[in-house]
Image 1 (tube, rainbow, N blue to C red):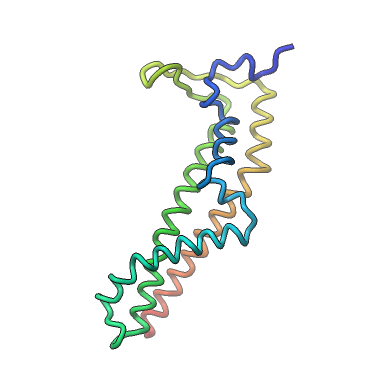
Image 2: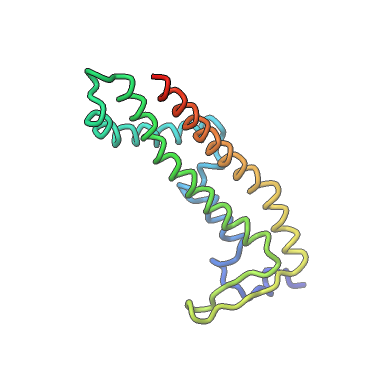
Length: 165
């Protein structure tokens, strides 16, 4: 008996389950799958790198000798932007694969951009893909969303504190 993947005309690298496995094995996209503390430490490293990059701008804008709180606070806020870029890229990558896994029909290209087609997944394959979405991808997206919300909360709190200082 042939399995559903044997009947699949979609090239191996464009099959949604293989795209999911590629993201799992990717150095960058696998961050969301790491333990919570490891995930946060990677984001902290990105934040520190951002801090190094924005600190000269902050020092020029707010001389440390005259305005130390504003200098450090603006650098801390500016360092969040690389973290936001990382999280948005993670979210977009995992959302793309989630959408491909959830779809009943998937678009694929046989040999180039000009000959794309749609293929309808068999019921068994669709059920398997949807289980992957529910149990493996949704928790990752939730983690990324929570991280973005935390940074948003930090920005809001920073705006309030900035007006008080």
